[in-house]
Image (cartoon, rainbow, N blue to C red):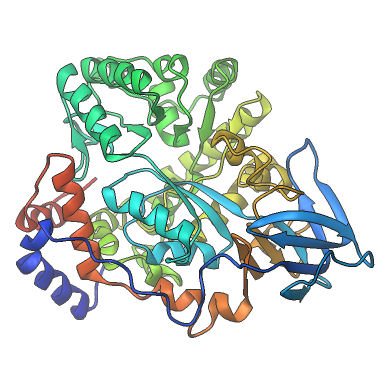
Length: 502
């Protein structure tokens, strides 16, 4: 990927001055042009159509008024029944359809600008899957309205062992004692979700699992492989069986391509895929397919790299763009057809998972490679709608189902009395046209309404989404490295970025 000279110079400047990693993390200034704090007075959305996704089919109510107070829905009344009390604001919903705010269950958050980008696209909850201390602070600032964006859940740092999938920002452990110490360190820091990664050794995984269970932490991530070997036919062999993650009750198992790699030993065999789907369903495990993450690799290969520069890429923080550069350059040289065939298999595998009763949630892997925050979640929902032949199932995978997985059933991802007032309004019906999700007319977050101008205007959320601050990003990143016992230097990070990042 080719970067503007200003970006390269900015990165070089940071690498030369970032030894101030131990400095107090920069606090975000108040948002300009848009108020993020929850609305104090009652809000009414008048004469609107609502769709709730908690059941086996859509629950549609037409010509109703949504009453919002203190960040929650306090009532949904038939049009013409009047409002209790005196609302602070009445928003005309004539011709609009409201659905619960969308969830992205797999993001990699580099900075708060991506939170504004998500909200701009109607994403009102994100689960960050590579945590650092600043994510815990951000979650509090979001709830207080000091920063504009969705609700934020986060894992701790990615726990991994050395291997082909290990990366510079992972927390690397090899022994059981090291793994236990890492889990305790993450818990003490405030993390309650432990992300497991592919190369985690058998000893480290078992120790981390047991320590997390003792502390009451949730396990999520990749099904752990342990040491990886290949047989005489070149088929991968794993020290840890895929069923380990099924037996250990992961919150979610991530990435359809990783499941096929580990659970099917890399074969594109639909009969084996169905058998695996039945085992996943029997274990009552939840899967985050992230179909868009692999498809974006295909699109970069197909376009010779041009796809990485598509509209929306400007909301990716500069460091994320720089880190992705080597991978984009490599994938720009790949043959697209074999990867396109894999994508078609992954779509079919996802359909099979659904047919066999596996619970699916939507996630985009935003923040990695060319996966644009907010926009990539809409891409993922469209892919799910195609794979499952059902816009309803796809949107449910981004609303009611993730709320249930996160322990927020009937509080988030829903549209009814008592639910969070996290909503998106459209001038079309997404059940009839899934592309409707790309055109939000308004977003309500914690009871505060952002109209079209506040979403995309010059001083609205879009402006916040591109207001990148390299110094803040690097301060937070280096603080995170130090907190996990990996005080990497700016020079080492620079070498990793310029090297062969996977």
